[in-house]
Length: 196
Image 1 (cartoon, helix red, strand yellow):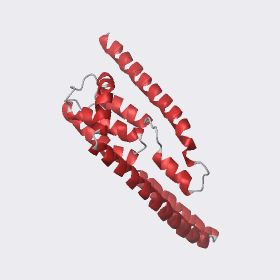
Image 2 (cartoon, rainbow, N blue to C red):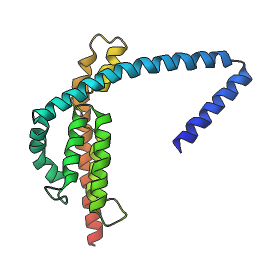
Image 3 (cartoon, rainbow, N blue to C red):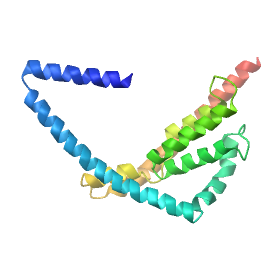
Image 4 (cartoon, rainbow, N blue to C red):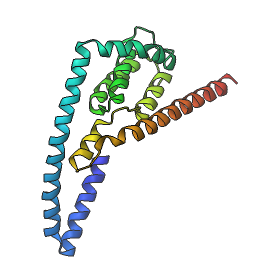
């Protein structure tokens, strides 16, 4: 659906430019935007490679395993209906760690795999409690190092691209806490309504 909206907006813009006689401006904007997109992509790719390399090193020295063990009690409490050794819990934890380090692009396939495992565990067509909780936490996305934002700030000449770290940590901590509390409130409200 979204691709139809974008295609429609593009067509409307081109028709308006033709009627208005500003097609040359549209062409110039297209080429400038394409050049800027390549510039941003190259900068983000280098940062992405660096952090994925760091994740690989962390995996090699068992740092991710350590973090997974450290987070496991927290994850077990958040997702009580998932068995402790279920593969979904591992994917959820890995997704959470990737988001914490600002690697949303690396977190996405882990999140999809976690959802597949959770869906395989469920017999209903409706999303399970774990699926909803995971989606809420993944959307609020607790982040310690916002690597993409740091890269963009650096590319566009910020004097201090890392000064965003503390505000991001505060904002995402609050959003994740609020998301978990709201998720639990709705869950217990539904349990009370179904119990009547």
